Length: 146
Image (cartoon, rainbow, N blue to C red; front, side, top):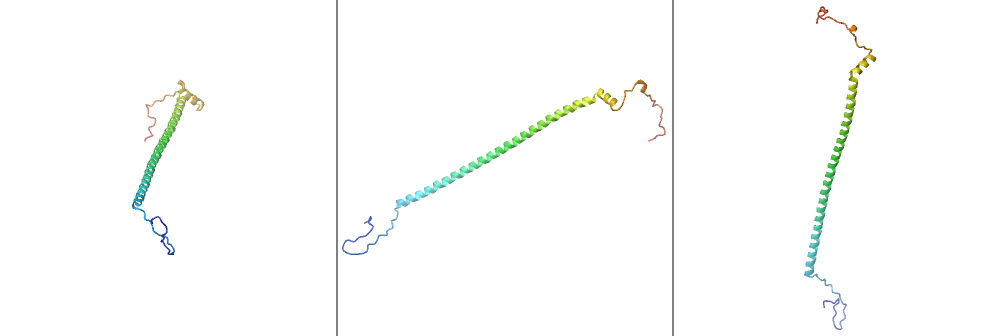
């Protein structure tokens, strides 16, 4: 009678048939299988979450190391650029220094000094008759005291 929906009585009794409302309980094997399946799904879900966490942590570490390396390279590049700028400034200063030394030698020569003093200052080279000899053996400044 297990597979029947209605309980029929054989005979001439007229009754309204009633349906069976038997709730079939899952068998013990099915409940064990479901429990095992749920625990397996839970374990797999936890493993995937842990895998994702570890992957995310590794990617964050790699990203931060990459940013750190790129920042260090940028600092090195900036320092190298500054060194290049300073070396170009040093070379231009050395060129200017050499040009000034040449001008100093040019203006410091005796011929140039003589020429400038004669032309601009109207000076002349003294001759023997222009020389005045003074005798300092006598004290000409007796009345002047300190």
